[in-house]
Image 1: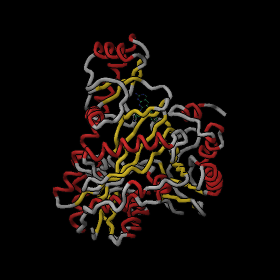
Image 2: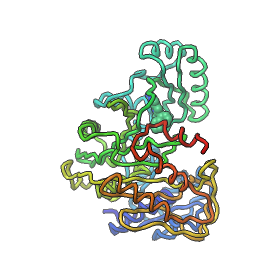
Image 3: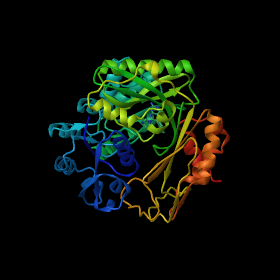
Image 4: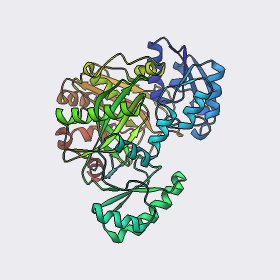
Amino acid sequence: MFDKVLIANRGEIALRIHRACHEMGIQTVAVHSTADANAMHVRLADESVCIGPPQASQSYLNMAAIISAATITGANAVHPGYGFLSENAKFAEMVEDHGLTFIGPTPEHIRMMGDKIVAKQTAEQLGLPLVPGSSGAVSSVAEVKALAAKIGFPVLIKAVAGGGGRGMKGIASADQAEEAFNLAQAEAKAAFGNDSLYLEKYLGHPRHIEIQVLADNHGNVVHLGERDCSLQRRHQKVLEEAPSPALNESQRRRIGGQVTAAMRKLGYRGVGTVEFLFQDGEFYFIEMNTRLQVEHPVTEAITRLDLVREQIRVATGAPLGLVQDDIVLRGHAIECRINAENAETFVPCPGRITDYHPPGGLGVRVDSALYSGYTMPPYYDSMVAKLVVSGTSRNECLMRLRRSLEEYVIGGIDTTIPLHQKLIAHPDFIDGNYDINWLERFVGLKT
Ligand code: MV4
């Protein structure tokens, strides 16, 4: 087992990783920017190293500074959390080259899934169902038109280096192909330094369903069920739940079995998430995330597993202590992402937290690095807390969520708590009746 782990992140996820480490008897090293000297993740860790100025590019993304911090503190391993360097194959390689363990998959698997065409081709070879589309990159307007005519309009152009919805363009008919292609190409080049594009049939009303997997170095793979992440605004998830209200037991078993077989064939290691669009009873692979995700606590709630502990265990080379039959999905869980933003305009609102009183009680978990008197720096993500509520049924979960949102006091800044209160009171949400387009329509409605 590791003696000491460096946590290459900040905020609630740095706390989350610290907690798992301390339960396992592992010492922690925090890294922080100058803007985060008073952050909770620094206070909680056993040691801390300042790695640079506020801008993430010069601190939390500074690979050399982070590896130096690990070396001088004598850490054995690095946990990247999510965001920042968590899906950077070069960083994973550098960590390993310095004799440290990267708590995550191999650099090869990170790189493979970072290229969306390679990811899709790999998924196809592994037997996963795909959205109909180009088998590789599309390099001309003529090619787009020819392929779209074959698979049928509407189609979607996506950036190979994209993901998370950046650089997507819809094409409803052939006369829109040229403008969309040129715009997508220019945007992809500017945003990712890679103007390679691919084409897919556009699905009009899917849900976003992702399957959580956990694998060791010895060929053992289990899936931990799905999360429904359909409620997003501008490609940012707002609320996630597990299990999905849209899946039945046979659909769950089918996709879970396909994903575990695929990951076993791939030789994948660590935690990972395979993302699908789900429409009219069919699953379509879109991407794979090779990191721990923000919304992992909903899976922890219904499986009663500690995903970070499992990540650390498999990173040491230990075999999984469980098989698929040991995984029993029980009850229901919902996560609300609470952002420091105006609940109507979504304008970020960092500042000083004057009062802080999180909800508690049975089935309530709050992952947050906030404390009373803390001043939020303006340089980073606006997510300040995850409220994760669980219960034996979805209905119980909803009652508890309504009560917890009511109880939560975050004084001094605007938060999106009122948005969540409105959202969970809507009959469509209560009925579980929503797709990936639902939330944008909901927030667009002036009430
Ligand atoms: C799609 C799609 C419709 N058809 N692909 C957006 C993020 C990226 N991961 C994939 N995305 C989409 N891909 C096809 N062929 C619609 C979306 C999409 C979306 C997906 C998941 C959750 C929210 C979304 C919001 C808008 C568009």
